[in-house]
Amino acid sequence: MSKRIVIALGGNALGKSPEEQLALVERTASTIVDLVEEGYDVVIGHGNGPQVGMVNLAFEYAATHGGGTPAMPFPECGAMTQGYIGYHLQQSIGRELARRGIDKPCATVVTQVVVDADDPAFNNPTKPVGMFYDREQAQRIAQDKGYTFVEDAGRGYRRVVPSPVPVKIVELPVVKSLVSAGAVVITVGGGGIPVVEHSAGDYTGVAAVIDKDRASARLALDLGADMLVILTAVDKVAINYRQPSQRDLDRLTVDQAREYITQGHFAPGSMLPKVESCIDFVAQSRGGVALITSLDKAREALRGTTGTLITP
Ligand code: ADP
Ligand code: MG
Image 1 (cartoon, rainbow, N blue to C red):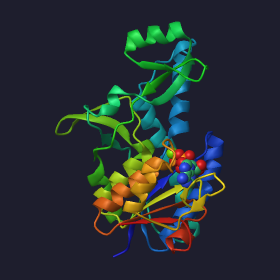
Image 2 (image 1 turned 30 degrees about the horizontal axis):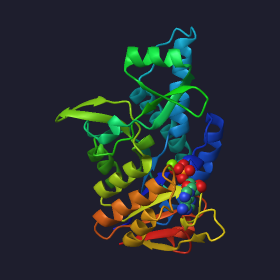
Image 3 (image 1 turned 135 degrees about the horizontal axis):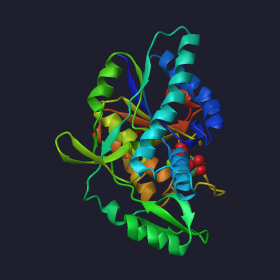
Image 4 (image 1 turned 90 degrees about the horizontal axis):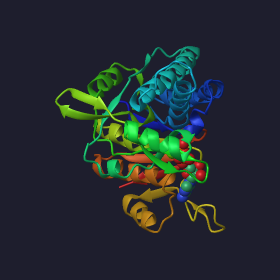
C-alpha cells in the first residue's frame, strides 16, 4: 500500500494577491506532483490568513462605503477562500499532472470543522480580522453585532475572533472516499470553516479561525496518515532561532520538542503551533512521524536528507 501524507501549506506557498497566488501555486503544484510521482497519496491542507483578511475587508468596506452590498459573515468569507484557493491549486496541480502524464483527479472539498462551543478560546479572542475603525465606530459595531474589538498597535480598533481547537472534520467520509479513489484532495482550507454541532448533522458557522497546522494534524490522525508534512518558509526547525547560537535540528523526539517548548524556543504565532501539531500527531498516531521543512526542500526532506523529522 502506498504511503499516505497530509501536507499543510503555509503562506509562502500561496502569496497574497490573486496574481501572486496563481504564480506561486505553480511552484507549489510542482512540489506536490513530485511527491505524487514518488508514490505518495497526497492530501493537502492550507492556510488562508491573507486571503480571508482580504475577502472580509473588501465586503466590510463595500458595505460601509455605499457599495450597496451586504456585510459578509466570517464563516462565509472562509468558505469563499477555500473555493478560491482550491480553484488555483486544482488548476495548477491538474496541469502539472497532465504534463507528466499522470492520470489522477484533483478535487477540493469545502470543509467544515467542528469546534467546541465551550472552548476557552471563545472567552479570549486573539486573531485580528477586517478593517481598522476609530473608537466610536468600534463601540457602535460592538453594540450592534456583539463583536469584540481591540486597539491594534496605535493604528485603530480592529475586530478579533477566537482561535479554537479543531474537534471533528465534518466532511471526513467524503475526503476518505476521494483519497481511496486515488484523488489528490484539498481540504481543511484555512483550518476549515469553524462550526458548532447542535445535534448529529446540525451545524452552524461561527466567527473564528482554526489554526491550519492543528486542523491538518487532526486530518492526518483521522486519515491514519503515515506522515504529517508541514511546508513553510524555513528548511528546518531551530533552537535559539535568530541568535548567534542558532542550531538547526535534523531530528526531534516528542519529549525533546516538549522540553524546547518549555524553554521558549518556538514563537507563539508561527513555529509553536507547528511543533505542537507535530507532537499531537506523532504522540497519538500509530507509528506516524512528522516533518517540518520548506516547499523547495520537500522532496529531499521526504528522502531524509534535510528538514526536521519529529519522531516518538
Ligand atoms: P506559515 O505561513 O507557513 O504558517 P509562519 O510564518 O506562521 O508560516 O511560521 C514559519 C516561521 O516561523 C518561519 O518563517 C520562522 O521565521 C518562524 N520561526 C519562529 N521560531 C522558529 C524556530 N525556532 N525555528 C524556525 N523558524 C522559526
Ligand atoms: Mg502560520
